[in-house]
Length: 275
Image (tube, rainbow, N blue to C red; front, top):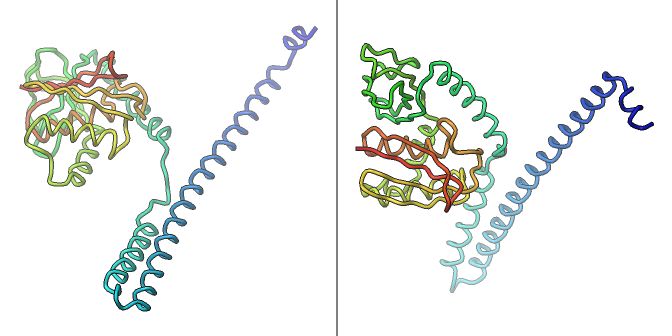
């Protein structure tokens, strides 16, 4: 009887029930996100109060105890300054990895549709140009490098058939600019050290992955990645692979081919090659 009752149910009522459940889930997700953001803000406020209190106590101690005044006043000033930094430099808005992944998915879907529609190859080449780096998806495996002017267009329709394809702004190039400003002393000239800097940036600075391990040979860098924050890394111009490709192309000033495969020692293996 229960099965017959389910079959006789009005489809419109079932749909209305599903819509109501989705609305409840959306509301619950919004509430949880707000609670998480408020929890983070509360932790930062508490940290600022603790630093300010430590600074004030140290300053008062410096006034009361002349023997240690210099040290205590320095400690007090440091505590107050740190409290100000926590208050004014802590971001009020937190964007979850899930939100970033959804944005990347929309971008990747459109780009992949273009690549499929034009029947291009999966070859992804990061090319240094006068004003940055472009991602060139080739029409032929044995390709010719388009000119910088041709690479400024989305559709690269060169007179040379081997230089045809599409050119995108890499998702990782803006991150490369940000990364370059944060690396103390700048990127290393030694490729092995540069690979380690890239691995640290992926896992520590940008938190795009949980871990990143490197393997370097002449003309090749391989980086094993685990727990990608933005889903499968083998998709077109994935942020984690894009940062590596764009950085190498810019720093080495040479075309860099990026290939992403499965790995036995990690979730994904990003292999970059150049001549």
